[in-house]
Each structure stands twice: as structure tokens, then as C-alpha cells.
Amino acid sequence: MNYDSEKDTTRHIDRVRFLIGRCAVILLERAVQHDASKLTEAEKSFFDTVGNRLSHVIYNSEEYKRSLAELKPALDHHYAQNSHHPEHYINGVDGMSLFDLIEMLMDWKASNERHSTGMSIVESIEISCERFKVNEQLKKILLNTAREIDWI
Image 1 (cartoon, rainbow, N blue to C red):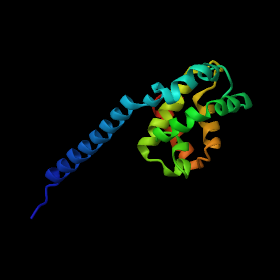
Image 2: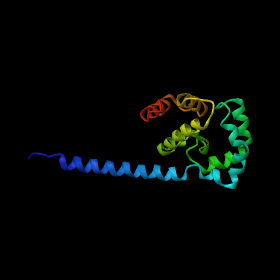
Image 3: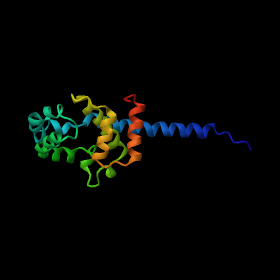
Image 4: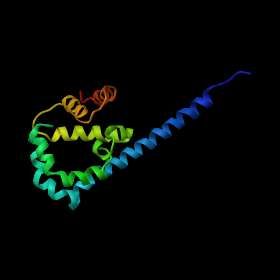
């Protein structure tokens, strides 16, 4: 008896398409909800006061860290509400899902674009990976993803 793989292969292709579609829906839901907590009173007044300054300081510099300290009450709330931040998890990046990581990378890129300091996404990834103790393998994956999106 001859086996024709077309039916099984088509079923597999359709299943993978469905599963990727489900992932796309999850990412779209995250896009709609991204950082919505920044518009709540628990965070907005702090960002109104300090937030603009962050776009004019070098990422992860001492001045940047002082600004984060001023934002601490808002950031504590923000990190608790938003799982795409390593600070959301007790074990940092190790607690994150792939969806968290994708949203985090998109957030890093968008934040990088807001800064007037001219830092590249490669520098941002390098500094952030050191800051959040991201291992070399995951750092390479983040850089590969940035390259695939044509950011590099």
C-alpha cells in the first residue's frame, strides 16, 4: 500500500497556521492594552512631572537612574500591571513568556525612538541585556529579531 502524505501534511500546515494565528491575536490584544496603566492616575501625574526628562537623558546613566527613583511609585504600579517588564517578575526575564519578550523588544525599540540621545537599537539591547541579566543566547535572539525586522 502506497502512502500519500498530502492529506497529513495539509492537516499539519493548517494546524500550524491556526496556532500562529492564535499567537497573532494574543500579540494584537497586547498591542491594544500596551502601557494603558500609564494613563491612570496611579501613574500619569508622575510621568507628567518626570517623563519628559527621560527622553533627554542617556539610557541607564546616573541621571536616568535618578529619574527612575523619582518615578518609583508610578513604576512600581506600572511593573505590577505590565508583564512585558522584567521587573514584573520576581525572577526577572526568566519569568517571562515569548509574548512578554516580543512586547518588551517592541517597547525597547519604541522607547529608543523617543530618546533624543541617538542611541541605536543594538546599543539599547546591549545595555538592557546587561541591566536585566539577559543571557547571551537570548540577547542573540533579540538581536536576530531586530535584524529580521530590519532595525539593524
